[in-house]
Image 1 (cartoon, helix red, strand yellow):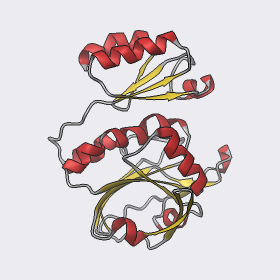
Image 2 (cartoon, rainbow, N blue to C red):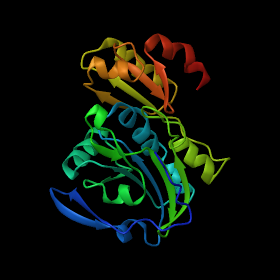
Image 3 (tube, rainbow, N blue to C red):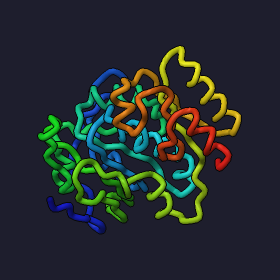
Image 4 (tube, rainbow, N blue to C red):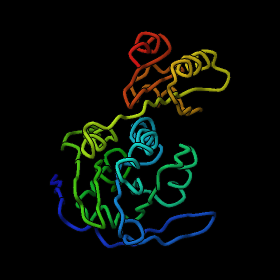
Length: 242
């Protein structure tokens, strides 16, 4: 698989079919990038474990820090249809991120990032990457290494922030996967609050999904700054470091 770095090139000229305020909206490449400094990250699919637990939430948590570095907007792109992306954005409460559906894969294909994931029933999807775009020109691109599975090493929010400003302070942020009525989840949230750590709660995930993200299949499952912590006992062990 050849994954070409396109730094110095202009982004592809396409029109995205999105959903806004209950209706259809055509969004052009110019609408997104013209005259703006934009961070865009692309991922394999909405509602998938890594995308939901770390990739999108961390960008959302660091939005204010990115803005301090002159970034006008943060865009998340996936080869999903508009309805799926709209639902995922609502589920994630990602108010600081523009979710962009590349339903036909036009933008992703022209970027050279369209890959075949038919072996897991996904069809054609985007490879995971991120980039900084200045007025439509790709200044910097972080492409995940060509490895089996779904590597997540360089397209994360902290890597992009470090590129923009190595001395920038990244705000703390946590994600708590919970279920209704879980007393252990309540304890975890209270502990995070006591340490002043902002968290996003994601309820209702299946135990199989928790295991896929590296957990034991029990609630809560906690990530801090995009790093897997584990359950309550694990949180108590590391909380003093934050």
